[in-house]
Image (cartoon, rainbow, N blue to C red; front, side, top):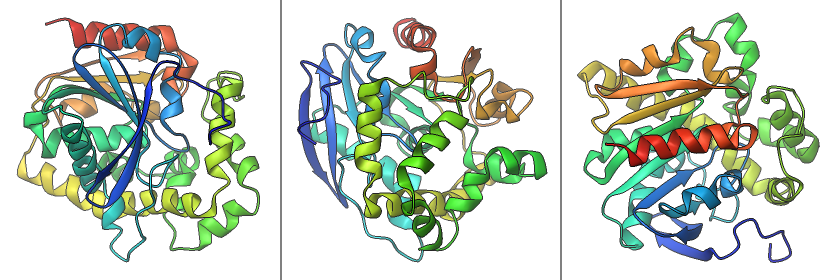
Length: 301
């Protein structure tokens, strides 16, 4: 990993031990803490285009989720609990506490968005403001799964199959799978939005069989324990209490709903949002618009 391109000059590299994993992160900037969580099939590298501007206003904490990038790989289990978003949210809360931050701003893209909104539900006292990028809640995705949506996010069903079926198929051609997945979710169906340097980071860790298995376990958790946690909260009428910003690509995955904001209004009493001209990967396809939207949300009362 030491010979990979430097995406965050001046940022500190740190590995922090929390219950259940060792979390690798990059830390830089100054001001209030802002925790940024990446999604699948990426790592903390996703934020490198918008980090310089955000770091002028915030101390950025950019971790790799458990099993991804350079963080340690929790063991797989029959109940998938280690990869539940509740467990990952607990780990991220412990990470921030270990770094000295009892309250912080928060944003998550894709799988990181699922960790982020779960953190907002389970640990409301630590979240100043919360942003989710190009997702709908996990239970909403599963509940609206039909022929059209299933074709669009086929990977949810594929990756959630019992081990080791999906990992065996992916590891037969991991880089081809990675590049197809990334390009197929962009607006122009290419890798053009991803910098050469970020792609080196993506390809490096996605060659590791155990990490591919960890990412599959993430989706198996999504189809089981995460769904149950979401449904329990919905049935109990529990809502996100922190101010919530919802951003989605106008050609992204969350546009499977006619009105993503309306979906999130069922989960939050204080939510606003907007579409960004982008596919799924807002921080890399539309970095300026994404950065401006986040800064406006976090810095305005």
